Image (cartoon, rainbow, N blue to C red; front, side, top):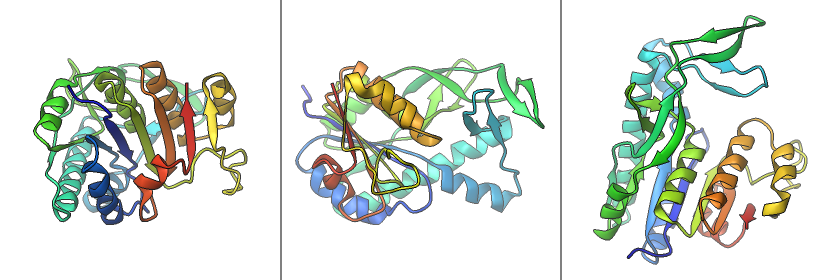
Length: 265
């Protein structure tokens, strides 16, 4: 029976130091079972530029933004996920760690009618391949962990409508819950949840369950999804969630030691 499982979500934006994170992660993975969930945004943007594909976003009436993923963009998203996953496997192998890119293990339902603001008007978009997460199949991931392999999981979900683009932070929360993970670490290009978004020194060190509503109010932009992921992971039984900075050496160890914003029940 696996215990003390650590799920780490590495953001896909520019600035994340994969090589430095892999070196640190190799040390952590020798002490406890580790699962990686990765983002793809920077690689996806580069592929779009290379192929001449316009990068489009959908903005909900409440202000949430997401990548507009029609069928062609979804196929490019799958390609980007494959590239990033292979990069993580190679980076970990350089430190003597066995890793394997997994097929999608998160399940979702397609949002076949998305309300979005387009040219100043709200309209319904019906060709978007993004998903509402419904769960995760932990068994393939457990099998790899039991074999001493680090699973590398993409931000994609299976559905009756094919593969879907999903939010990586909330995907990591769903998988951590399904695995019964002890900890979830979410690393990106910020130091944590800020009291004042303009002041990087205003990191909130700790958020308890009762303080989550205020934390959600304080979160803006992409950070709101990370805080929602933290809330969902805690609800799913994860002991602790840390949102931290993945741009520095020792990022995983630092987050586990409390650097960033720690969420606990």
